[in-house]
Image (cartoon, rainbow, N blue to C red; front, side):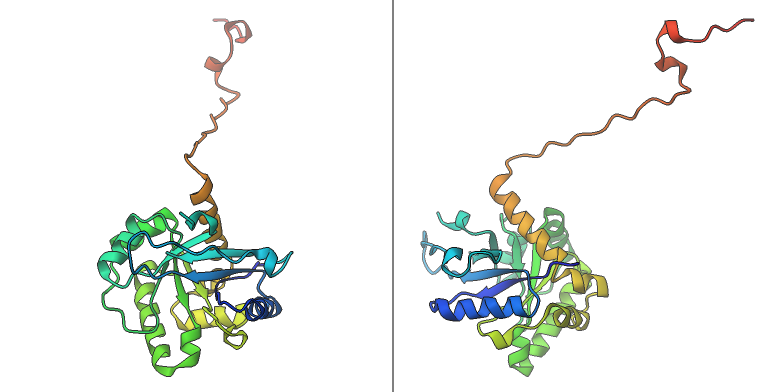
Length: 243
């Protein structure tokens, strides 16, 4: 059974409303949710707020925290929202982040290029598309579909996740409905389901690795010699051959 995740529930100041949002996500079939704290850097060395303590909401539901920008290590996922081609290129190739968010509320000011996207895929960075703006407005629906199709032409559905960006419970759709929406956005059937399950898990693991791993040790299993290889046997064990 697949474990479904919505990695973008918008955090607000009202904890009761946020609790209701998480409860609704669990009700429609999500096992894991991420609470999104958005930070817009308007000045240098701007402080990032501390995330809402999970214990203030629930005690058992597996909730993760994400920041969209000295407190970043308190968050499980770090996402960036590049608005220019240069920033998109840097986010894909250099920034130590887990997600690159794709705009869906306006026409993209640049075209996606294969090299930076391939680098991001190799680094394990995910691409996030949100669907709640498409529910609210027909114009945003066109932008969502258009920008998603442009992305799929280059990345072929790899590392793509679908999130709600919900601020109210009515903006959350069930995981199977979201997977069907993924078909409209250019995803294959398997990638559409992965966009709300396994790809989300990969993002969480990438975030965990980003915080904990300092190196990688690769081991190679040495092949065992075949039984018929006489050279592998000691001299005393070799059969004596007679002329």
